[in-house]
Length: 404
Ligand SMILES: Cc1ncc(COP(=O)(O)O)c(C=O)c1O
Image: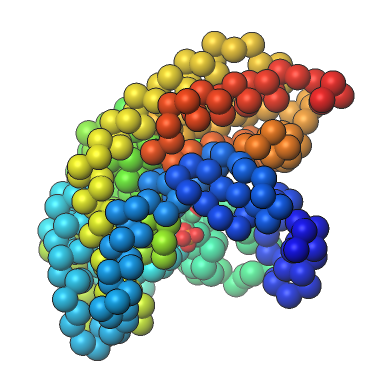
């Protein structure tokens, strides 16, 4: 099949809930993918940080294959011999007592919301069904009905009401607004330490530490959604580590599944996670032996391969290079670790135009919110490949479209 044929075939049979770039990928290895016509591309998106370790990392594929030959799914009706190890390893990594495994990121967020509410009723004494959770403007936490209830993106919400109550929104980075929004019913502050989908938006210096202190002082759980920012992406194991903040609940996903299968989890201490009793929450696939085996290998990689430090070192170089280049039409370059965004000034090409231009030059990246292009290469990308990507990005941004 050609690219056009494959796209038409998919469009005829698959719901149109995405607007992908016109490339049909059939193979991948490390930072590179190949399309159905044999063209190669450098993957500078990494499935929104789910491919932090590159495509088909040998240690992760090996762990999955070994587990495929033993057992893949038991449900939680029975124990399996991989889950305990996975939870023990991930809890150690997250510096928490325990783990609750799920599958998609949105399920992880839903789990954190339920645990925070239950904690609020049982431990804080909030009146039944009165719990409030504070969230930030510009957030992206997933697509379930409850999660879009506190999104401020019209596209995510329009046509999907009625919405779940119990959420209050404050501007991202505004500590005064957060303080003013906390009341006796507040059980949690849910925040992306760096907003990914919004376009790699960093909070003002000191915000996360001040929010942490405020939560501790007012008896509110600090819940960090590190689904996109965590596991090395932002230049530390967790983005919260960059500012020395330990959340009460961490939500992880994406790269936790090693790019092989969906694995998410929340981590917390027993005084929080202990509020859940048998039958109150679960998932048929959450904590399945295949997911757990891959998760164990992911934690092991993160503990041994120096990837967070590498992300920090190479990310600093990326920002220096791009900020040092004279890029017409660019309003801002921002980022943390191997995770950055180029925000255009809104006068010329859109983010999608630039992503399409990059595609023709063999670089995969994706626009977000019209004027921003987000980059997140595998943390394992070689230095020559990264240099090649930066040279191409700079060239595409500097060359007027008509000359290409
Ligand atoms: C910060 C954050 N939270 C939650 C999610 C939802 O994850 P999933 O798409 O696996 O449901 C995403 C996905 O992009 C995300 O970036």
